[in-house]
Image 1 (cartoon, rainbow, N blue to C red):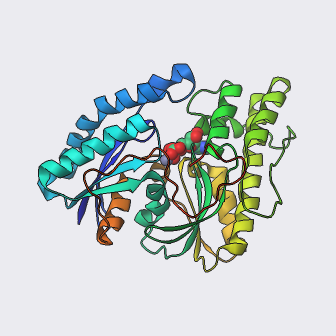
Image 2: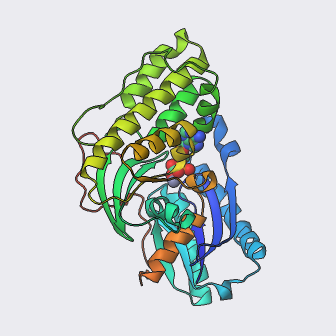
Image 3: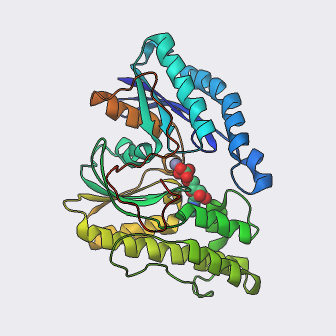
Length: 341
Ligand code: KG4
Ligand code: ZN
């Protein structure tokens, strides 16, 4: 089985070719950092235009890398949401056009499902169900992954995502964009105990997250401390919150065989290390995808497409893009979480 995957929901344009037996034949990526850097964040209109320019050459390059053509593909998988609607439309419409032209089935993939299943692309031994901490620029959720298309949300952020807090901290400290890797680098030279910062929701009963107060505390503390100390103290506060909330979720994650982390913030060494310790404490396997698979890419979309296609789940060519698209349709809205999918 060979799947073409397309991703364009935020600020990465990507195309990949992945087989049903987990071979990544090609994965191409074009970032837009330079275009968004002057604004210190992703500008939706600029992103959509950049996706239009980048996607077609990336698809050609991916086919050339893999030495296959569209005729060899079994299905076309494209991100259909959640994300910035202009960008999502670019990838989804391209996927529809290719599927239609080649007479192949279309798989409309939830970007979050791409992150959620990406550890299964990296690790053939990862069994279901597993507890997933999905931490990215737009999301911070604890999910029990029970099967393809079967996700139970145990916790979510009531305000900002963890990645958003990293990006904001980088902006406050003048470390540039994107912020996560810059904060991690700065933190390496800092003292994590130098700046007292809050641990929002730590110890609370339900495994939800909150980072808005931490962000505000960083802004207040920054003028009086060295940037490296603020970065290190901030990173430690995030790690403490993620660990406390994940520990809480493990109590209700019935039958979980592994603790798994995915999404851009999963690229953070301190986060990975602390989660590994938590998994060890509980006698669970710890699985984290390789760094390139943590941040947005199309291989994870192709893989989620492969899993859905294998389960007989394809979509009609008139399937709609969904800027909001929760993975667990039964999850209740959490107070204060109105702006997050
Ligand atoms: O999954 P992703 O590529 O895009 C979304 O779907 O949001 O995640 C991007 C987020 C950004 O907020 C970025 O700052 C953060 O992941 N990130 C990191 C690191 N690398 C990326 N955060 C902390 N440490 C890192 N090394
Ligand atoms: Zn993502």
